Length: 178
Length: 313
Image 1 (cartoon, rainbow over the protein chains, first blue to last red):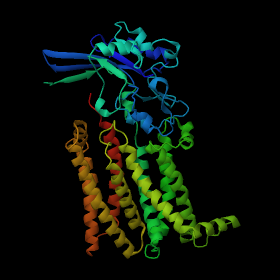
Image 2: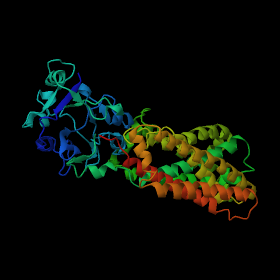
Image 3: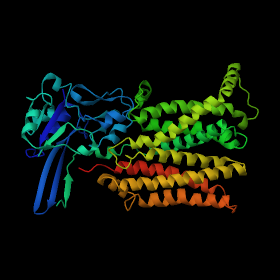
Image 4: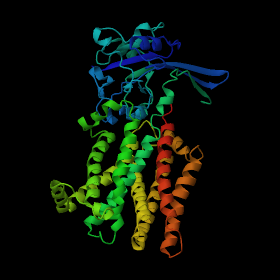
């Protein structure tokens, strides 16, 4: 089982509903967020292109954060998700420095926090992650890459996609449809 | 052609400033750890070689500051943690993939030995020192009997400690400036050089000072070569590495690094030490103090600049 997510950059309007849904679902402290919107405007006026992406932890297959964690708090969990064990984390910050996607942050309580793909609170109960389920343009797809019938496998078969900085060697599990 | 990119609205105002996760604690600790490793390396080396008489400061006096350096360094590390109550988790796991993990274990070997080393030489500082209990005399005799074995352990682990301070950084591929394997040898050389400088500062014997000045010149030479080599490597690498090097070649860290670290912290003290060896009258304190300043600044600059370097996407 390999959980993955695909975000359609052609359909995303950058409304930030995914950000708010995640904050609500996961009790993310005020001012912090586990997912965020990036808008890239590319070109010279009047030939401009815009790409909007909903970004979060890439749940990498070769995760630098897991590799450098001195206590094993950052670990691979079910379906290849990368999670943090709260009471094993010493808050040293090595994983924050090691993440090329800047997806982690120190929670005010001390441990390091990040996107969990809503694994325990939603996915294991058969629901989609909060961000996916609220998206008003339905631009996000979630599922198991090993299951050819999962929404994410289906859409990746049909559409062109990219991952962020694949040259960092992290094998990310967050795909962007282009 | 891509002429203009505007990236806006990451919309995590509380997180982006936090990505500069390491402040003064880590570079200070890396400096103190490297310095302690340098001093202990020379103490162990000259004990193994049987040259304690010729190098009284290196073997017997200078190691007295190492427990202080290590404890202050460890305390800085502790202050740096965000989840301090769980720091003991470091010592319930050994993760060979994580430099921070085996660094923590290396400290658990080096720190006790540094205390034992001081205890064995305590009469050098307090000539009338007497241990209060018999078992302390027995322990004293035990460690004296196994001094050479302990010196070998210390020699190896002080090298690991000096090296690990650099490898800690080089393990992070997300920060291109740190992501070079040269950083391990470079920090080790710098640590040994600052160790030699500290010994020169504390030494009362002219011959010993000159011996360590000679060692220091050699180490500074290696260090300067490694620094140039590091930038050559960056410039021959990918765009992110070229931009990381750009922080030092025209970017914000150019003056602090090339003036204060490379010129005043390495080249100038090396010249002063050469002049001293050529029997010119140079106040001997200046060169080692500059080396120590350069070593401290070097770690601050690498720690801060590294966090400013990143992948582009």
